[in-house]
Amino acid sequence: MKLTITCGIDWAEDHHDVPLVDETGKLVAKQRIKDDADGFRRLLAQLADAGDCAEAPIPVAVETARGLVFACLRTTGRKVYSINPMAVARYRERHRSARAKSDHADAMTLANILRTDADMHRPLPADSELVRAIAVLARAQQDTVGNRAQLNNQLRSHLKRYYPAALAAFAVRGVGLDSREARAVLAAAPDPHTAARLTRAQLRAALRRSGRQRNIEVWVERLRTVFTGDYLHQPPLVEQAMGRQTLAPVAQLDAGRAADDLGEAAAEAFAGHPDAEILGSFPGIGPLTGARVLAEIGDDRTRFADARALKAYAGSAPVTIASGKSHLVRHRRVKNQRLAAAGYVWIFGALPPCRSRPNTTDAGTSGTGTPPPCATSSTVSWDASTTACRPGRNSIPARRSPPRPRRR
Image 1: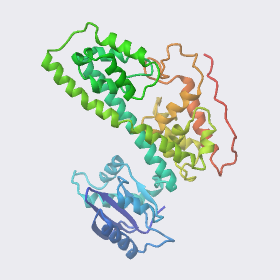
Image 2 (image 1 turned 60 degrees about the horizontal axis):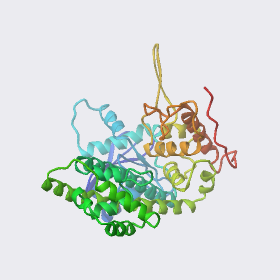
Image 3 (image 1 turned 90 degrees about the vertical axis):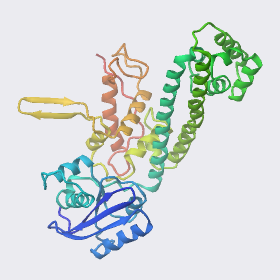
């Protein structure tokens, strides 16, 4: 497919280079716009002068589809292509062997990619506004959970250097260092010397401030026993300084509880989408996991041609590398990492215990970190089922039962 006029935009922090090329690769127009409302109006005027109209909008290629200019550009109804920067670098080498590089040359490369190989690239999906909002909330919640886990690991590593009593006190199932109880106690006693002097009344008050209502006296006695135990200590001044350092990650963990609020907001938005009933019919998909899946696959019915395309996008389809006598089938590493992570949680929330792997850990992986065969095969089949269940397909199963693990 050859296009008459194509546009490429090289993204920068405060400005963007915008060239237009015709079907022969000749430069028709170019300009540099700023990342503001005036720059967007200039961009639309440049496209209109080149023949842009509602019936035949000029397509645009970018490397990074982020920012207000590109968000507004997508609302105009034109096709916007997000080209992988590695692919752009390989295209650039087709025309020059030197490593010369400029913003205008990169924008020209993007425009020529659409001119010659538009069929080899996919435009950004035409998702609804609700799906975009769900994507913002679901991705923010996922990032916040990751940041909270990283803070928790940093706090654990720090406490191990001077405060082993805190690690022992909160090594309880369901009550870890990121729990409300742990954060309240560490805020009141950030070092071992202060913790050992806490009275029962002070511990009781700290636990109540955390919101705990049950088994308070049991916890008070447990904490008193742990904090007054015999442990190794840092020098007093060093221990006090490390206690002051502990207050920083504890405060950040308090702020990190926003993941719960984001999760509730994502689940609420997901419940209002028409596809929520379909995704929720799959065993193992809850409101939050469903929001994550919908955020990544979207609701554009033309985005995936078939189930095979969706499986490749999710990373559940293997990659075949064949050359001469060599024939390798490997795990797909280039994929949507967020969708793959959501599928990992989804499948292990639905599968019964996998008896084919006795050494499988609680996380659902073997000792090498590889998912069991039953999980991989089920993810593949459910990716296909997700595509089949979307409205507009020939068959819409009402509900699917979780697949049984194969006997080995």
